[in-house]
Length: 77
Image (cartoon, rainbow, N blue to C red; front, side, top):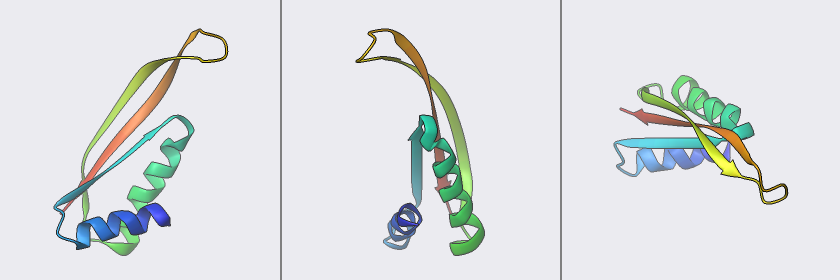
């Protein structure tokens, strides 16, 4: 709910859009934030675009490369 309130505050303070970004296991939380915001709190806000990506990140422990998924959800009026 903290993320939802932060997005709602951004929109109510005159912003035209807000972008929710997440990587890895937090992707489901970003999707939940977008859904709660558009379905319950601000029904006039719609999903403008969704961008998914995969980044290669070097592990600090093993030194190997691993793929990390990311999502960017742009919400606006």
